[in-house]
Image (cartoon, rainbow, N blue to C red):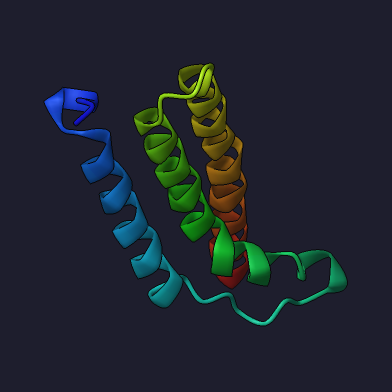
Length: 101
């Protein structure tokens, strides 16, 4: 088994990411009703973005297990895609919370 972060195999890390992503698919922040058309992007972002971040991280972990050439570099690029997705989720979460006050 290919050892990954902290000596834990990438297969385990990927499985953990899938479990956390599944949990965020079921348990999620609830957006209030958008006050305007401009805020209508909040609902799908709050619903799916955090789970998508964990799915992207899981794909990155599973890609590291393969012996394909360039898999490590591809896995790094995929893992970095999670960062802007998470930033978008945080902006939506803060925007929604500020609108409630």
